[in-house]
Amino acid sequence: MSNFETNAIRIQAERSGAKEHSVPLYLTSSYKFDDAEDMRALFANEREGNIYSRYSNPNTSELIEKMAVLEGAEAGWATATGMAAIFTTFAAFLKSGDHVLSSRSVFGSTHQLLVNVFPKWGVTSTYADLDKTDEWESLIQPNTKLIFVETPSNPGIDIIDLEWLGNFAKKHKAILVVDNCFATPYLQQPIKYGAHLSIHSATKYIDGQGRTLGGLILGSKELITEIEAFARHSGPAMSPFNAWVLSKSLETLAVRMDRHCENALKVAEFLESNQEIEVVKYPLLKSHPQYEIAKKQMRAGGGIVTFVVKGGYDRASKFMDALKMFSISANLGDTRSIATHPASSTHSKLSEEERQQVGISQGTIRVSIGLEHIDDILADIKQALELTKLALA
Ligand SMILES: *Cc1c(COP(=O)(O)O)cnc(C)c1O
Image: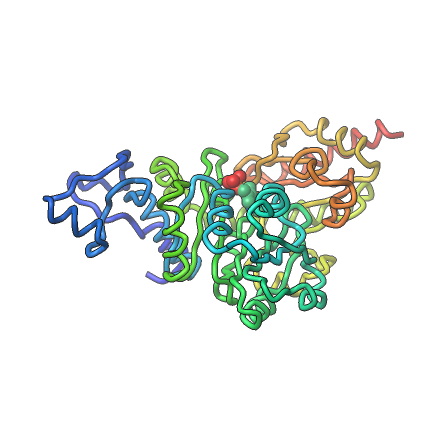
């Protein structure tokens, strides 16, 4: 089994008993040992097996194994949320005095960790722009332990050349961590380019239907062992139920992503041709500054389109209210199309200047293009633009 779709469907937890075709849910907090000797051997790490669901569970193990194969990684770890995956990674590898070089465009809560949480423990960080790699060298410090990036970024849809970044991290002997949430392993495999860890908020496209929270960390056995050493005792474990849902969701990841990408490209092309729009950012638009890099490292452009409507906040909020089918929500990667106004929601904790630096203005709208029929998606955007155009006049 070597193809993505087949692995996503056919990798299944080992089991015996009822011969069920679909893997059942192992809703158990702990496991029995055969005898006292078995218990001793498991605790002494002489034998592999389940001890307690904070450490492992057949459903989380299945999800991890599948995701590791899909990402081209040796091993992995599952957490309750995407933020738990990011926190766990930082906490497992950073100590007081260490420095993190991070892309400036990061998820709002990742920004909070870097500026408000880790400094309490003596860990500092510097931001670098994804599109200005010539500046990165000067931002490295002797104590730079970890490099963290999101590509494509949220919501700016900026992209960094992963091949360049893999070499850069190697040269500086830093652990390279890529938040691969927007792309999923179906569109992009950072480990192939030298990333040490690929991280996911499984809440987004891995679930793909807006039901459960989840996080995943994939990488080498060596690094995952360090993650495990921290996570076993600090307890960010994913619930078996969520792992069961997410593993089933992976079975349809490829077909879902194909359609998300196909729909999103059509939306991006439509918006680019519309006079009510100032700018559109989508990886596979020729106008994207990193279009060539996107084509090199991504199978397709993903499901997120970010654009700026003419008329600032007033127009942006009227446009959102005029949408009939799109949901107004802060989530993304759902079957249902979603519109978000980052400046007043996901990125409201940033100052106006910080927002400008990551390309968010008051007119910026991020849409997560769902799996509804493309004609209905386009019709909703068109009518909302048309309606608010009249309101402005
Ligand atoms: C949502 C998101 C996260 C955080 O994930 P949660 O599951 O909400 O904790 C991290 N990074 C990116 C890029 C995200 O979109």
